[in-house]
Length: 218
Image 1 (cartoon, one colour):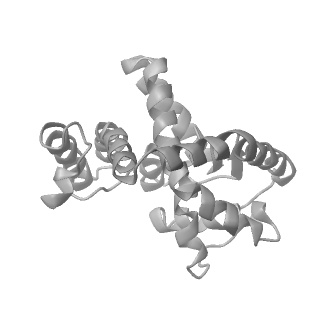
Image 2 (image 1 turned 45 degrees about the vertical axis):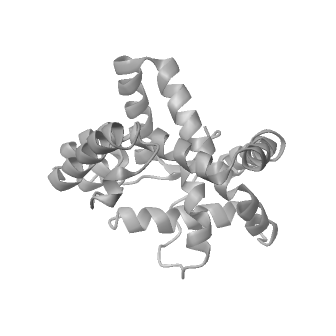
C-alpha cells in the first residue's frame, strides 16, 4: 500500500507553508526509509501505475476508486463516533448506504449528488480530538509520512479490521485504495520531486501542512 497522503502533495505544493516543521529526531532513519520507498516507487509502483493509467479508461479508474473508498465509510463512521463527531458519523453512514444501494456498490457517488459529500475521518483524527500529541515525525516503509500517534492509530485500525473481516481482505482493500490514489498523481508527483532539491523535506513539509489542516493542534 502506498501512502495516501501523497495524493494531496500537489495541492500542498501550490499553497503557502503555514505549518511548522514537525519534530524529526529520527531523521537519519527516516531518510533511509524514504530512500527505500522512493526505490519502490521508481521500480515497482511507478511502472505499475503508468501501465494502469495507460490501459484503463479514466471513468473506469474513477469508479474503481469510488467503490474502494465506499468500503471505508463504515470505518469513518466508527472513528467519528469515537471522537464525538456525530454529524461526520451520520454523513459516512448515509454515504455508505446510499452509494451501496443507488451507486452500484459505490462505483457512482450517488450520495454526493444528494448532499452527502466525502468527509474522511481516521482514528488518528479521533486521537487528535482527544488531545493526544502527534509525537515525532516518522516515515513508514511503503506507507510513507506519518507521526507516532497516527502510526499507532493505523496499526490499531488495521488490527481491528483484520479481526472483523480478515487480514487478507483488509490488505487487499487498503492496497487497492492506496494504489488507485497513487496512480492518479504518479506522473505529477515524479515531476514535482524532480524540481526539488530535497524530496525528503518536500514530503515532510507537505505532510505537515496537510496534517495541520485536519488537526490544528499539531
